[in-house]
Image (cartoon, rainbow, N blue to C red; front, side, top):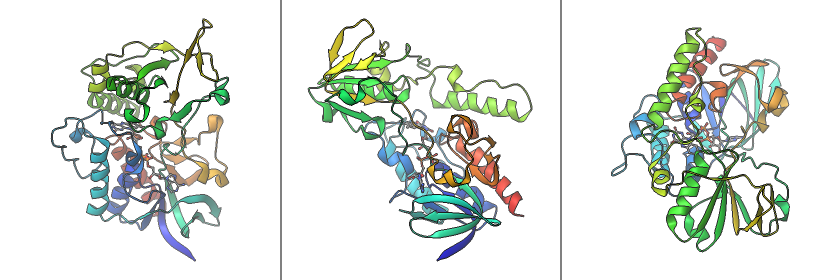
Amino acid sequence: MTQQTDVVMVGGGQAGLAAGYHLRRQGLDFVILDAEAAPGGAWQHMWDSLHLFSPAEHSSLPGRLMPAQAGETYPGAGHVVDYLTDYEKRYDLPIQHGARVDAVRRHADRLLVEADSATWQARAVISATGNWSRPFLPAVPGRSTFTGRQLHTVNYRCPADFAGQRVVVVGGGNSGAQIAADLALDGRIQTTWVTQRPPRFLPDDVDGRALFDVATARRRALDAGRSDTGGVASLGDIVAVPPVRAAGLLTTKLMFTRLTATGVRWADGSQSDADAIVWCTGFRPALAHLAPLNLRGPRGRIPTDGTRALGEPRLHLLGYGDWTGPASATLMGVGRTARDAAREVSGLLM
Ligand code: FAD
């Protein structure tokens, strides 16, 4: 049976919830379809020791401050899941969990949203599917020949899984630094952290608050028609969160040239054995459900004006990164972009 609504939100992580909050304030009829069986989006799957890089009050969605976590300046991922679970309930958001959307198609003056649970006809769609479900692995020579274990950030849980092993962590971003620190601090693991270029740490006193200020200044400049002040990448790549500082990992080995059956080969021809490689090499936006709309531009991205898809004004994309709004892939940053998207959708449907 096909169901009717004003707006279908695809994805019920923090971006979907923030947009849901604003759609409700706009008085629109909508449903949030989320593939996860439980609330919390990607935060349910982070590794055990992960903590936010901002204090709770700087990690809040619109309307409701994240409460502090007892004994922690920087809340853990489980605390974020609790907060998002509470957020869904508090605002009575119409969310269906365990509902994966396979395709969004044009259908006369509606968009047809095909989920495994049901099909919806909507006047507009907001896609907020994040990137956690699309881990990226670089093409490295010999990758398939390595006989040890290979895993991505999304599969990493805790150091106990690697006790007594030699582990190579690849990646110069926050995930690489934090997972390398997590392993190194355990003391039972021989950890080698590998990056493509020397790691760029932010000063110790810079946490997510400062990054948010940079993103806000950028948004204000762009809104006022001034020149782009640059994103947070201009400051550095890695937030020196307490475990990263404690591990003292200030240098890395530069990227190996290939994997061998037993480890890695370095640029000077020498080799190191390894039991496991952890690829902290990022993600790509999860956009497969939008393929029938044929909107992809260069580098696989869907061209947008703000959050609105240029080739399909009834479609908005939210939370995939600076691409659809400054800092919109962060808890604190997504609220304003979500508000703008909800307002624009509301205006379209008037
Ligand atoms: P997600 O949380 O991934 O939610 C998307 C939802 O859509 C998921 O529930 C998914 O199952 C669902 N979905 C996907 N495809 C479909 C489909 N086809 N149909 C239906 N549902 C679908 N941000 C901060 O603010 N502070 C931090 O300290 C911080 N630390 C981070 C640390 C790490 C290691 C990572 C990876 C990110 C961190 N971030 C942090 C960034 C950011 O907050 C997260 O990436 C966030 O999870 C993005 O939210 P989202 O709602 O866009 O996506």
